[in-house]
Length: 462
Ligand SMILES: Cc1cc2nc3c(=O)[nH]c(=O)nc-3n(C[C@H](O)[C@H](O)[C@H](O)COP(=O)(O)OP(=O)(O)OC[C@H]3O[C@@H](n4cnc5c(N)ncnc54)[C@H](O)[C@@H]3O)c2cc1C
Image 1 (tube, rainbow, N blue to C red):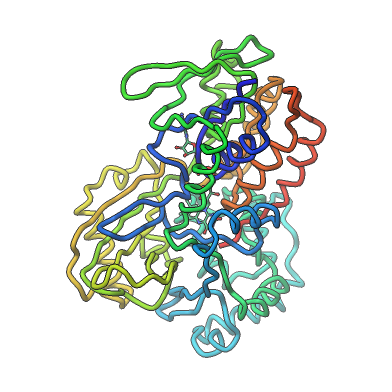
Image 2: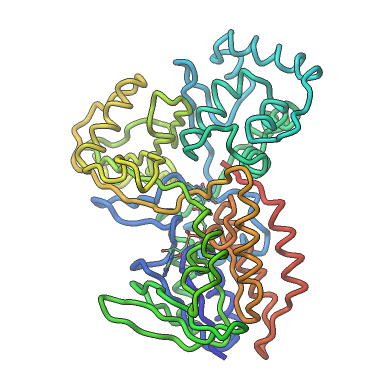
């Protein structure tokens, strides 16, 4: 049996690792980039190891997945304390939230407003037409929504919260009621995360190495361009690599490609209504702007969060403070996350202009650069976040149902299920998908359906 795995991000690398370990047959992985990790990968920058934006392995990771990561990384997997801060109305608030810090630093008008909202909440009627805005406002009140969640949502997803689906509030905001927020506050003292010494992407590099040792073939730099099928089964994957085209004949396909792209790549083409539905689904893009600075460290914080719209970036991270490594001395990097659309002018800005933009944000936020910029480097993620505009379920279900008719094709992962997920969720999905595969090539669809139902309860950890 030949198993084709499409994509080598967390979901694809995890699936290849599990399939190769179970000796399910020949496993061939097609990945357009030159290495594993997808949006959760890492790369070298001027002697530093940096990630595609702030990434942490959350302790909520499934126990079986975490045990494998721990075994693969050994002492390189560290437990690190979280130490970030949020800029709100010119005050810096510690993140994760801490009760004493909130009492000391939260603007009084904000505290009073939030307390009044909790009382007022009892008298607010539930709107007939739910949205991200109505769910959060009903749960948390107007003050915190107006100052924090709504501007952050507009920045992250590019839509007014009124036009975002209520599902986005359930999947994306874990503390969406005062009770949940209090429970989070109580847990905040134990804010810890796992982080590999050589960057977050080391997890997927190790999964890739181990899968390759077990016989999986990785075709990096291979962009999937088409999938031949007979209406029932997919028989061949077509790809392009360095200007030439190739094919892989397959018996089963595990795809982690964006689900709309997957539907569009089927040959013969999907019905017009399915293609239209695929066209109606969109992802928010992100530019990652790295500043390499001639200094040991920019700050003691791992991440700075910028919810307010006056700042175009959403977050700034300092990779050295994630790993805790001190080398190289006299040099550090910052990574600013700029959410945008691929059709916007920001997407085509030069590295120099993007570097200036970050420098100005830091100056205006009161944390100016104090060392010279050695280099500005950017990376662009075309699919950073799925956008759940209201009614997104309809086109998604249409595409998903049509793909569901193929008896040897399974789609999963963040892009594959159009899900707001962490990398550990994507890995868990990969493990579940391979668990459903039998050595005779059969797939346990009823079991997969139950897993799919379970995945809907995943809530993103920030
Ligand atoms: C800024 C940011 C911060 C995040 N922080 C965290 C965090 O702290 N902790 C956490 O757990 N998660 C975090 N996440 C989420 C995490 O990155 C994702 O959950 C994870 O990357 C999803 O893995 P995936 O394999 O499903 O998708 P992806 O990582 O997107 O992988 C999909 C792969 O498919 C490949 N591909 C796409 N099209 C083709 C094609 N045509 N041919 C061949 N290959 C193709 C891509 O190149 C990619 O490698 C963050 C995400 C972002 C954007």
